[in-house]
Length: 164
Image (cartoon, rainbow, N blue to C red):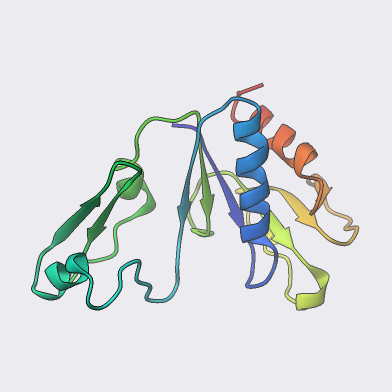
């Protein structure tokens, strides 16, 4: 499975870059799936809905399905958080999986960076970061792209994973 990550500190532009990359790469005819790591609790379900009630009653997994989509919710309860590798086994085959977060995992990544955040770059200390997408010019030993140049960043990722 071809895998490429987008990492960076909070408000660095990761989600916007992910969204633009999915649009750009799927527009070129490739299939793309995404994985997003959340550092906080989240819920895709709502109190009062049947599926929420199933989970609240103790179901380990609830699969919610319609003719347009399905969602599988798995309650970890007292289980450990699954690794990225474990989660990837649950995805259908696609040309490319883009991962937002999981900055400590070993897959190749691009770091999103916005100077206004004042955060230090991760790239100088992390060899899995192959390039930086920034809103300001940087002097690094790896490629630096304009954060908004989605075409150039997509070209780089697709070349890195062997899809062009």
